[in-house]
Amino acid sequence: MERFTGSFTQQEPIPEAGIEAALRVLNHGRLHRYNTAEGEIAEAALLEQEFAAFTGARYCLAVASGGYALGCALRALGIGPGDRVLTNAFTLAPVPGAIAALGATPVFVETTEALTIDMEDLAAKAPGAKALLLSHMRGHICDMDRLMAICDAADLPVIEDCAHTMGAAWRGTPSGRHGAMGCYSTQTYKHMNSGEGGLIVSDDPDLMARAILLSGSYMLYPRHRAAPPPEAFERVKYITPNVSGRMDNLRAAILRPQLADLPRQLDRWNKLYRAMEAGLRDTPGLSLITRPAEEHYVASSFQFLLPDWPAGKVRAFLARAAARGVELKWFGAATPQGFTSRHDSWRYAPAQSLPNTDRILAGLIDLRLPLTFSTEDAALIARILRQEAAATFQSDEDLAEAPLAD
Ligand SMILES: *Cc1c(COP(=O)(O)O)cnc(C)c1O
Image 1 (cartoon, rainbow, N blue to C red):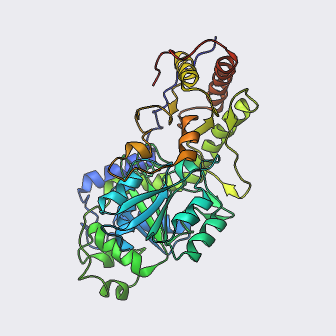
Image 2: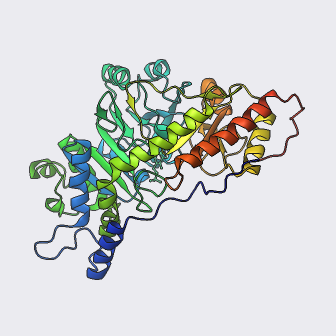
Image 3: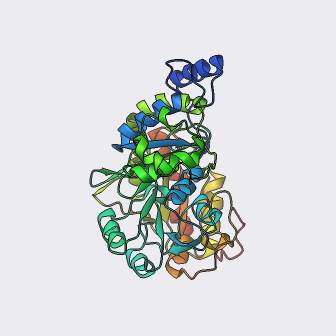
């Protein structure tokens, strides 16, 4: 029996050019983004300029984390205590966390079989909401044309959480460029790795002036190179609080060579994804996620559904896969493990009824695809999952007491 021996949490090393750039920053000691020598341009400012160009945005701000980027964008939009902010019921904890941190109330929108936001539920919940924090969870992009039409009609500003869609697009428009602001993460498990880090892009000068002041620019905002003109700051510089969350030059130095190499890396990720997809197609009892033609996705993880499987069978499948070295995450487990918390784990938000999301998450399996895997690795993982899924699905043993694998 084949067994997989790779690690699902091992990323590639930082590229040599990133290590050299980091050493230059360490050697000169000017890690704070506003600590520059005469004539020097800070790494953080250069990263912003390059990321703005990469996304086609007018403005960009580098911050301390993806979660900080979300909170900063919401705050720039004027979200505050008591406001209702819509977001995906299927997302990661930093998303409802960013809403709750402002004293606002997360209102969860249902999930479709494509793992994207449910448009009808969105339209129904839009009245009275102050914003939509749209999470492209696990890189699945909804019909952005339809979503923007619904939100524009309801006067609902959209902030995009692009933690899993850096470099992705919908009908040619980059993810993060549909709404008022786009937020990205450069935390280790995303598409670029600086340990922690975040980026915000926007074309709106007022929103971006506020975001830059919020991030802790003091009155040094003229040192930014992807910022709105001084007039935009004049309007808000005395009324915007400093909520420090800057990115430092060390992380920016690590990220710039990764950004230059991103298109090639995204291509490698998608090859892993396609190898998984090809290997799992037509597996009995297992459904792949349909990806629309308009979606240019960038993978870094893989999802599939075990629709309507009893929990005992799912647990048995997870145990069999784990025994062969394939570490899976299950969003349907009774208690959250690792990153698999879900709306009913976020008890700081009011309890909400989301039957479709609950049904889908009950059968949702997730695995990471780090770039340390080869396409042969992905094909091997798919073969193992195919055999174990088919065997578990077709077995008629009583699996109610199957061991807990999560
Ligand atoms: C990682 C992630 C974030 C941001 O996370 P940080 O760890 O704060 O950078 C936001 N949304 C989703 C869906 C994520 O996976």
